[in-house]
Length: 239
Image (cartoon, rainbow, N blue to C red; front, side):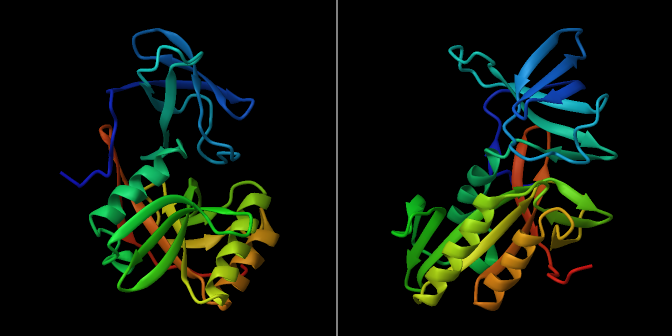
């Protein structure tokens, strides 16, 4: 069994997607015949993995106080399950960092989540230890073209701001890493989505030239949860 960094607290149920709408809502019909509206924790377009009729995996959050207690966790795109719950990404990466499972980021003794950089941004992780300080920003990706994972699937001014923050921290002497958790297993490389958000793609290229490291990590997706898998190569060229 593959190592899972985020194991679902409650079992998933399967069904089909009726529609995804208003960004954070999805109607599904479960295999037992129930029709539910579930929470879709994904602010992107979910291009290529939100087709009506697609197989879905949902899960009861266990929080009876929520108006929509169920989460949309995964969608089947072709032959691959895709993790579409972006809230999972930081949990997966945090666990993987703690067990030194992401080789370029292994060896730090302290892992702090959600740390302010002092200049108006809050980044996902600050790692500290004998190697010094390392800031890590995490983005969850679902978009692909061929065997290539891409980010973003919609214009992201917030993502561009984070790239600028990483570049400034690198200029100040800290190590900085842009980590993409690729939420599907049918990809072999990563590239920014130039045709969707050229400003972000250009910002990533500039940040990388300034010393910001790029670490694309392919996810392991199962019905039990999600894990951090192989580190993949990347290409920043505009094609």
